[in-house]
Length: 262
Image (tube, rainbow, N blue to C red; front, side, top):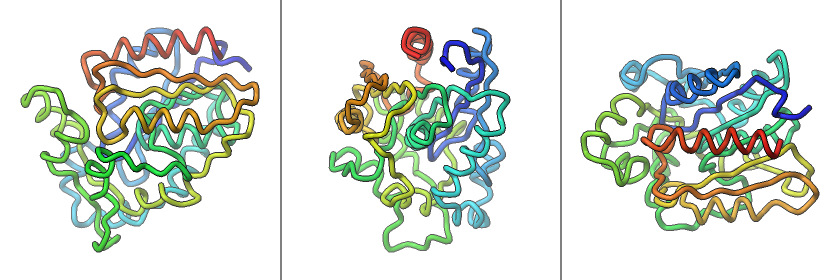
């Protein structure tokens, strides 16, 4: 089935943020005739403020694993009325790559994705922005909440202070350190040699937590096998790409790519 004939889109949310970060994207895709879904992760139903207020009692979220999270989205995709287009951001981008690798989507778009197993993220900005969520020498029974200072560096660099604060209040939530550590294990495995549905990987010029160089290495890890595979780096995009004023330009590029390549 061609993605261009599919009218179902599954949006996969990344770490640290609520699923409503897709709200404008959903409305835009639906205005183009798509039916969209952006389910919250297990134990993440609620507003950003509500989820922050659950600490330190959000132990179910703390215990969530990456394997469970991937299976959750895989089962969601399987229950949809048709095989969907899958679009994910950050850790959701990694999950998108995994689901496409499993044959669960007609096309996939990984927006600034976390790299799969085997691609060592040695970039300094990634290490500076992301190491705290691994929770080394801390309890896995407690979730991790990114501070505003870390949020400024990891997500919203280049934006005004007012925009940074608004984005933090509306989106930032506690995260499972167990899920984050899963990104270093076989739970994050992708078979780069396996034929797959059309896949687009996008990157942002000023993204610090998932720098463009890391996305390029992710793209280059795939082996030529006749599958449609493309890469696009957008200028001026940070990791808060879904909420930047330029988000509609990115969405239009993705819609055009789906039409032409899927």
